[in-house]
Length: 77
Image 1: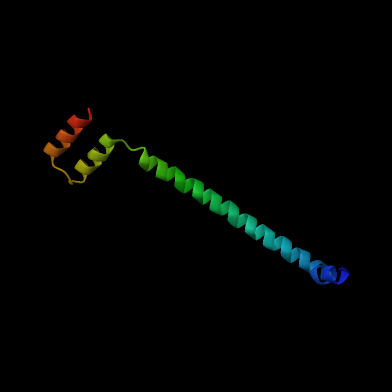
Image 2: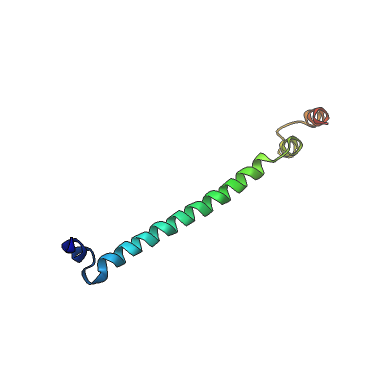
């Protein structure tokens, strides 16, 4: 058992390497969670867009005619 500890902690390098590896893993996990939270926030903003806002954007992009826009808007009201 003592030979295992001597190999792992030879001049303290083994424990420093393991601690460094641990911190790298922790930093990657924190970065991943932050990015996941931020991407979920943008997805929820898109999902909360109302139907009226959607047809207004379609009309602004000239994907639908004015008559189609007014018809859809009337249906929503």
